[in-house]
Length: 381
Ligand code: PMP
Image (cartoon, rainbow, N blue to C red; front, side, top):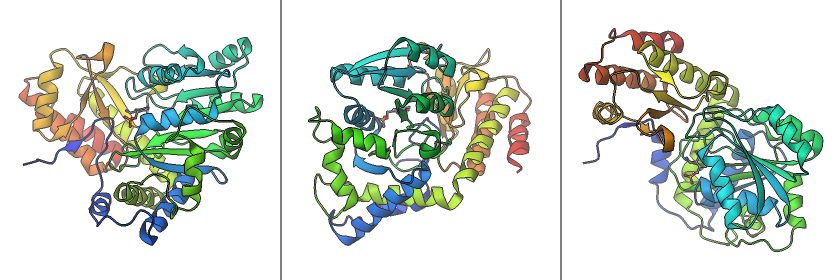
């Protein structure tokens, strides 16, 4: 039997029962009235989540990586140069996608655990006439959150297109497309929306849509936004069969997001992140990510002396909480703990309690209850 555990990996995040129930409702016609109405409302809600009034939202079967590919192929023409600002793994993936399609990009990378500074972006822009800049908002590998609002300020002045990979941020950390001047936010269903994985999610500004329309054929078919636009305007039309159950689940997830309210949701993510980090610090852990770049959606946690990665994660899982290991250079040295989406405060307290039980069984010396008390104080429990 599948024993339910609290999923605190950096996505998928725990799926709320309301969302789970919506997935399990009968599959309906992909051009019928139920799906048409759910798709339309999901698209409307999605625009509210990224504070975009006039742009075009897209929801397509796939995942974050497809959304990354769609973003590049629909905004950047062959021969135009663009710049990737990378905090690590997912910035590198952007470069790999560009290379796969013969797109021309430069790449600046921050030190791991930090993000590129706006001044570094400005300096880079003085060297070369970039048409677009792409940045990961939160790198899921390093836990670093980029100052996308500041980047947007720099780019808006110069009329440069700005693409944000919000896979580990959208719906949990502020992204104001219209106010800040972001041209495209790409994301996925399984992180801050808390829906099951299976969707590429994109919102495109009017200006960026104009850019796509001005481009001739692009090296894409399924990923061509112009093939999807008529379906997003009228979901009773057919291009490729949408995943109706998953879209219903995503719609439900956007309802939960908006019922909570964006400001409250951002504050909750920040508070939960603070509580988890304070508890972990109290218990002797430290963080891979540098202080000003700590993301509200996940923590990349370094082990104290005497706690080993494999036995720790195995025991933590036996105690009911699943976290992820480090990727690449941090493998074996850190664990990555997601705290995004619809994770409740009681789930956070459960996780800290399970963490203490795990540490006790590993004979790690600490004062029992101190982590839990610290988290409770911050969460007001
Ligand atoms: N970008 C970021 C920042 C991510 O965290 C991820 C997934 N962890 C992706 C892109 C790729 O998304 P997916 O795994 O859904 O393809």
